[in-house]
Length: 393
Ligand code: RFL
Ligand code: PHB
Image (cartoon, rainbow, N blue to C red):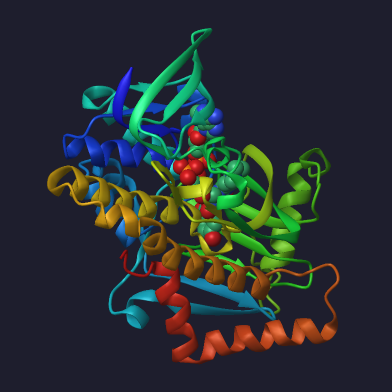
């Protein structure tokens, strides 16, 4: 089998790329190692920047987000037992974000691709990509018990942090910059109405906590926990009590989350990593395959979307004009935005979490930075501009 663009991975990056190419009449084949149910139910991100929503709209897959997405015009920061709102609209000239689960984005894209898109194969596990700098490169994969090969004009690795495409780039031609953090997140999904209509990011002496949501009836909540935490050590009641303690405000003992049945519980490590360049020969990397961020800035899914928006534009330009100019610029174009998001995610993470080795001096610095963001329109505007998303190049 041969195709113009071989896409490895059917997460948000791969699926959105397949759709953008389909709309421009460019052939693609998407190979996803997991089954459809697994991919559609993997609990992950929930915040879409305006640019991501616009891309879903222009790709014709925004019916769900337009019907069920919740526009958020700000967030709340809690620290020192006080609450401070960051008003995105006022600070950014009317920008906001949308709360719409990654699971729903993925379901919408899969449904549409299966109706009128290029082939999307589930349980098709890519084993290796060969000949990144040859024409054509070859993708070897296992599907329905058989070893198969797909040759492509271009291969795009959208196969996430643990994917195989990155290995197609010789080690001497790539550099990975990475940082890990001395804490993780315990994330839960709860059948309980969110207690507040915006997200709450809380700094506390007990560690960080985040209250997000998936719908008016479903909450998504996160707690900072030590690395290697076993979720089994966190029965539901312990999670709810800890969340209440971390979100505590003023002297109001009555401020409590609404509790409800917990339907998913998982520990998520916090890492930053960038592999450069994002292109080698005919192989491109996009989304988590090239870079990951700790989730505190809500950037992972949005970076995955902006990479493939830039890449689709470059592939379309090449197909229409024969000019490789935009493809040649792909890596540099994306990396500028990636590093900004890396910095913002690092900034939010280190401002809000308690490092187990942190001193009282470090805590004072965090509180000073939080005060600055809460009280200075300049500092707040910088946070709001990054959170709502900088322009896609
Ligand atoms: P994805 O979503 O990881 O999709 C990659 C896809 O590639 C498939 N795959 C392969 N397919 C074929 N052959 C192979 N050899 C393959 N190897 C892998 C995988 O099955 C998968 O379907 O990457 P993408 O598309 O770049 O999208 C990025 C976002 O998913 C990611 O940035 C965010 O969701 C980050 N993230 C979270 N962000 C949040 O804001 N809140 C969260 O709660 C949250 N949870 C998470 C996360 C990222 C995680 N990982 C694994 C990095 C939880 C996890 C565990
Ligand atoms: C989420 O809803 O999953 C979410 C929201 C904001 C973040 C991270 C995760 O910063």
